[in-house]
Length: 362
Image (cartoon, rainbow, N blue to C red):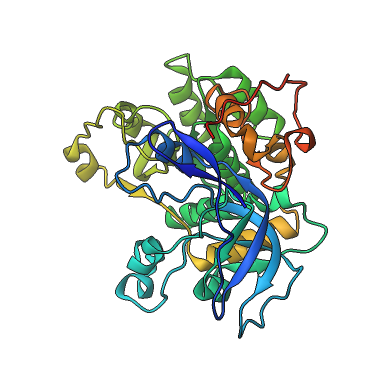
């Protein structure tokens, strides 16, 4: 089978490798679609000593084969599966920190979603794999795992109807967060330096979306919308960490600064802890979903309670991976989806973009 494998920083090669063998309780999935996540970009850029890097985890596909003892699925079933699975029995899991479970961090898909087939372990099958109705496109189903991340984050900051939340960054996660917040009656203020992303947010129904280039405009808007209290929470999905501290002023006393992105290569934030103390501010992060969030995200996508069609437009064959990277990094598209079973001629393009010749190393 074909699979994209990490060979070093900026060196992702398309290889022919053996189809994974499955054991008791396991299933082999034919991958129909897999989203390109920001965490994949981080791995691609990193100089990782362990070259057994798993690329691609937002996947949907069909059951190709089942191991002995599998009763939950049969060959031909459509499904989605998450890449990590918690033990559900340790200190972390019992306290609602499933994403900190050591088993959660250890587990993954074999070899990763950017491949024609993946092996799903017995625990994955049992806890984090869900059947997919025929009416749900595979491209839409790839949004279930990232939506689950968003839902857990919203639970952690306890957002509720009537709140006002600032979302910094109108990329895929920022937009998906905004839609999920709006769904529960939260007033969302979306910010991005790119006016095209702001217009996209407006198109999706985020009424208060701005570039924020007017330095004094955003604080005034937040004051007007909150009767001078400040936002109940600010969710940071993008931008330099140096802007975290100044934005504490946008949050109400007792409010939450939420970190919903990694900051591996950016300058460190310098936060005044005395301000945090006296204003009873909370600094809170969220990394990955719990099983209950996957279940809820699955239900929302299946019932079409959030329209994700705009994020499912741009698809690429495995041999076009470099072009997918180029368009994502160039902010030409919001989301790229790989179709491992499709050739270049069968993948689609939005906005009439001319496809460039692939330069993926083989």
